[in-house]
Length: 146
Image (tube, rainbow, N blue to C red):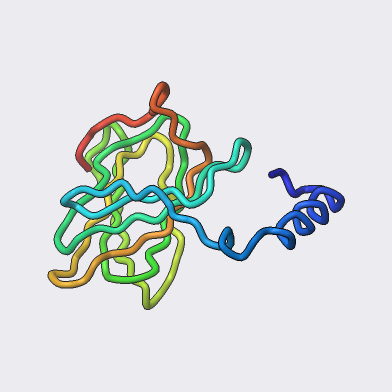
């Protein structure tokens, strides 16, 4: 719900306080393949979506760009490389990232991007925010290698 006003926030808190304990936890839909998984945590109509991406050792994910989507990636565990390249150019911008030094890396519209798990043994866990929810009818996702 939209919790931007105090009354709605209090109303929602009251609602939650009456939930039966067995509803305190619920499963999420993990989209799993041989590269790892992608799991949406929260979807909002006006603030985008929050997700967790897990990349298996040695895996590269992404290799796409967006017209209007912008994303923020934060690696929370593991060691990886995030690369971006502005469409129509050759220059690649790279950020080495790890859970030991958390930082936000922006995925800018018009830049193809990827994330590479540099580990041979550990999963790379990345928290992601996107300004708009994924819509299969309007994916705004275009394949192009970095």
